[in-house]
Picture 1 (cartoon, helix red, strand yellow):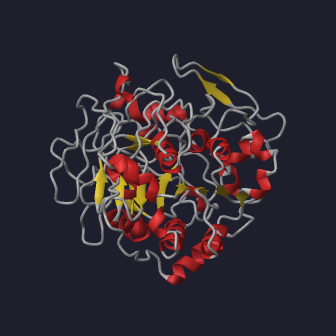
Picture 2: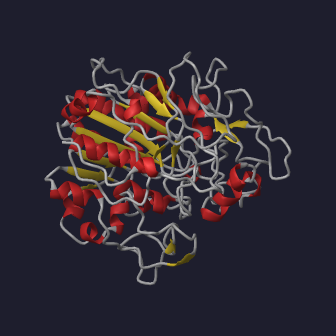
Picture 3: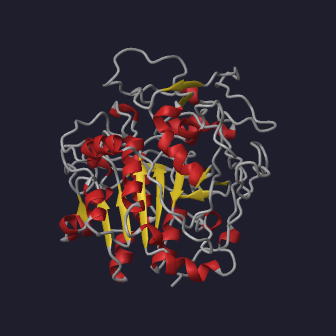
Amino acid sequence: MNSARGIALSALVLSTVAIAACGGSGTSPGGPNQIALRGAAPGVTPHAWARGSVSIGPAKIQHVVFVIQENRSFDNIFGGLDDKGNPFPGADSVSNEFPGEPTPVNHLGYPVQMVSGALKDCYSAAHDRPQAVGEIDGGKMDGFDLEDVGKLKCAPGTPPPDYVYQTVRYADVKPYWQMGEQYAISDRMFESILSSSFGAHLFLAAGQSGHVYDYPSKSPWGCDSPATSTTAIIDEGTGKVGRGPYPCFYFPSFPDELDAQHISWRYYAAQTGDYGYLWSVLDAFGRIRLGPEWTTNVIGPPAQFVTDVANGKLAGMTWVTPTNKTSDHPESSSNLGPAWVASVVDAVGQSSFWDSTAILIVWDDWGGWYDHVPPPSINQAGFGLRVPFVVVSPYVKHAYVSHTVHSFGSMLHFAEEMLGAPTLGQEDAFDDDLSDMFDFTQTPAPFKPFASSRSRARARAAAAEAHEPPPDDD
């Protein structure tokens, strides 16, 4: 059932001006750390499935769920300390002091002190391509203090100095830490495109962005956009940018693949009236938005996912995107995101689908927050900065931290292999299959819920809201 990949990953060549990447094998807490430190030569090595597991993986995983959250870097979510003062075990975080790891510095070379903040703090930095290039600064990761604060619709006044050098306090993101500590996380997941939300969501639905790197000029994003809306495009080879087309596209998407193979799929997203509708990216695929599947396969509000699973309904492939209040977006002024994600995971874990499902939780972009790991460069459009990535499944390695370089293409590659779908012609050349994170020979352990009934109820209520005003448009 596995699809052949048309890309020779062994031929991947990183640019001589590429930002130094860190690759290597995964470690469990207490195991030997094999992370290549910053400044080392790029070590991007594709990972092959372990002998024998390639035949049993697709037989065991019948359902793949992408849960997509908003605007957080790895260091922002996993870079702090837990309630006992310990960093996330085994992960390359800003708080985990590996030998030779530099202290964060600003563009003048002065040390910057990381601070702990609340998830609902609503200061939001600009985080499109120009900001990303400046922050990375050729791999030095020292330009974060030069960011534009962006629009402060929910927090009047001036933000604290160096506010982007923040880790979210453990109490706010505890469910994410618990999922990662019990199942698996990656500290080398990079956004496939060096830009903000729109291109990222396109990649997560199609393995490419159609050369689009910025969000449309007018809201909403997609075929519902006003007729005068345009996009911005980039030449991946030269880096030249220019004005792009109207944001209603017809390049192939993963739902196209799934339909051709008669594999069921659903896309759960916020409805019109909620800022989260911007992230309902299938609005940008004309065949879907202007066809019957817009009403049969694109489902809102997102809380319907929990109801459907409880009623014994789970598609082969599922995307779950949030409402504004459940998104982790800095300007949502909400801390309900972790409980919402926990409710999605709990719904599957407590259902008959648990033993046949893999849940892949990712954040679409870094949101302007500091991260200390420079991304590898595959072309002039990407990779983007490092984002959190958590995998929950009875077949992931327990308490595992992956140090293998992954991208959004890796997630699609995994789904293609598990569901028996043919490969997309992806722009994202480095799309391994997440194989280092799984062990299909292990016996599934009983599932334990991550959220209290009260927090699940609050998060589900927020995920069912239909009229949240937009905080900004990125």
